[in-house]
Image (cartoon, rainbow over all chains, first blue to last red; front, side, top):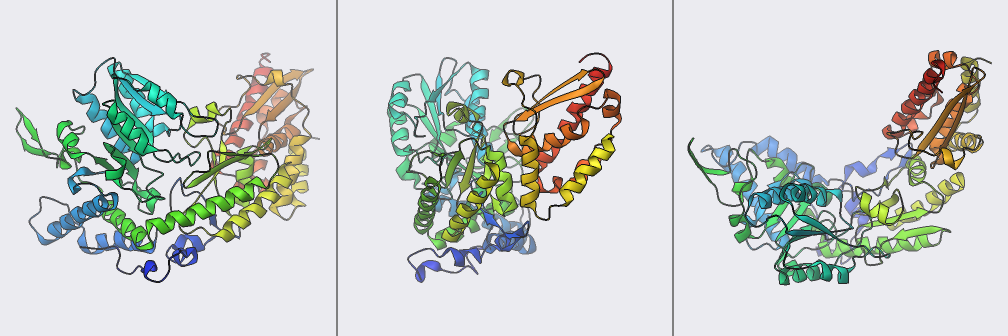
Length: 421
Length: 140
């Protein structure tokens, strides 16, 4: 059952380049004005807006399919179950997973990472004295769950340092790996600086050292085609709302044999085979990790979001966004006393500061002019400390942003800086 | 001039500005005109907690009058606290404690602020009254 793609246009049959104006027509929210000015939404790394295809899918689910899944014998229960499992397959195909059973529905990236931390903590794969490696570029959600696990089990957390250009020190990473390393958890793309990490290399080095790998894909899933066979990681986590899907739905990909080996983390319905008061036997993956009624509509609408981006073409989205980022970086470098964080090889986000200007001041004035940008530490306080700053301005991009919007941002920045200097 | 007269005067001045740009520039200007606060006074005790930018407030009393010094790394926040300093500086601790500071709602600035900043205004007002309370009890 394909609920999603119906009604969305096939752009690729007409053009080899993404037309952001045609894309915008699919996003009703973008037509509004803010403080009397046209909305320029550049906070996509926080969350993306939703196309009609996704909104229609959510509505269609509740209008025509709503029922609890997996155990009902009646028609609606079976139809809802089929749509839910079809959504799992769509996600598996998008990620090029080996099988749909490797796809676990969660509530988001944070939930996915906590699932792995909790299940690993209950397994016999970890013991006191082991080491977990994260990087200095991580979001708090890929740091704190590991810190909590380390505290509980007497494991040491090691951190790959960040170089001045906002990339990871991969020589230092190599030196950190040893026989005690049991897991390497890093992001694919930094939410704070947009740094595109060489996760293929990171995973392959970890594998050689005998460590498991988890990739936080929250900021790569909206911007890059993802091929899990190529990445060769053990876990890959992301949130639906970053990739034009609804909030409250996320995915954890896990290598199937590993999912079989790991114990469940939450008990309840769905995750069991048989329950007696003496002993409960658990279901097979992915159900073992999906206790309780899942976000059925969310999963189906997320599949609609993947149908939507695949219809646009992930490669075309990536090219379009990269062009915008390059234009924005060039525009910013025209300003005096500007610092752009991160390397040229980035995806999704561009982070910057102006000397002597507080990012909140700039964000407040830009908001008055209709621009939605993020200011602050982006849930990366250790990274901000590393650069001796309290935060940055972050512009982050999506398929519907235009070159015209970057020009307008340049004009707005000039005006705001005149007011603040 | 009483605290409420100073508030009315400030509101009249803000009323002169039609558009948000001028209003903001005026508030930023008020912040820039604040008496300088020595960097040595930027201590964690003087930091108003809960604000997203750093705001320091020093409250002391001399000859029965409150003396406020304030600073911030954000010029807009500094301008906001300058509004309070302008109406409360030089007043008796008792007058500060009983002052109705709801004038800030009538400045037309609050609706332009993110909730975090609007909340910061409440925190600033509370901190200034706390200083007056300590002074009235002979603490400051």
